[in-house]
Image (cartoon, rainbow, N blue to C red):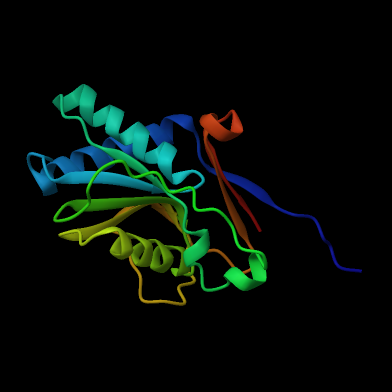
Length: 181
């Protein structure tokens, strides 16, 4: 009989997650300058919380308010019929124009690239951004599509059956990233 024991390992704790967001703030401020044309959009479920936290850091440090939106990509997934035979309601909340803006998409984990593809399709339906960049807490590899993140908190190599759990206090009552293999 096989040993079916799941191995769990914390790869980021609360202070490390905060350090990642502070690094993102420095990198984005350096890359985008005044930040006047930058908007943040988080892919549900944890992406919006990461985007809001980063916007708060930038506001504290630079006095600059970055608009933050929330995107539900469920209806844009290529496996929608398998997930929701009856369809779903779109919970996207983007209360600002994205035309000619620098859109930074936020997601918790980058794996196959399919979520990012769906998010980009959704964005294009909403307007024509000047550019779209991607920020992720974890890049676990395993791409099925040609997608790469511009901002990565941590890169790991994980077997296909492994799982990454990004936990945020707003949803999970704790800040940590745990890997199961």
